[in-house]
Image 1 (cartoon, rainbow, N blue to C red):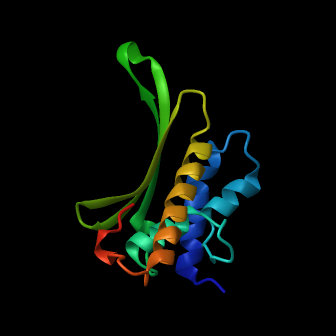
Image 2 (cartoon, rainbow, N blue to C red):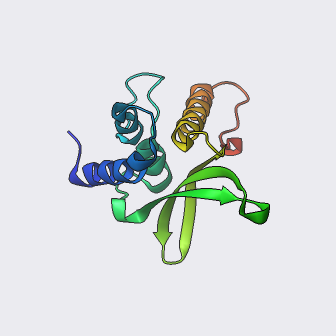
Length: 141
């Protein structure tokens, strides 16, 4: 059973990314925003990364999701960017994940793929802990 703080975080992330889903089915966005139970290797989502970065007690009020259009010279459309950030202390912002796609592509697909790659990398690094010669202090995302 999820805690009220976890449910609030899930709902906040869902509400922030749902309008940008475009042609993606709504259940895809729900899976992306849900708390990760790590039932299988293929379970990836944003809430897991937020809790990994800010701890299990992170609240929805500490998280912001920004989705912007990117423009270049002469205000020409060049892409879209989605960023999930964590507000840790006053005037201290930590970017949890950011994804950028070309204009016309789905920023949600780009964000999903980026989250998948990050969590896959994290799980691969966790699998190596205990191996001979593995240096825990050198792991990066």
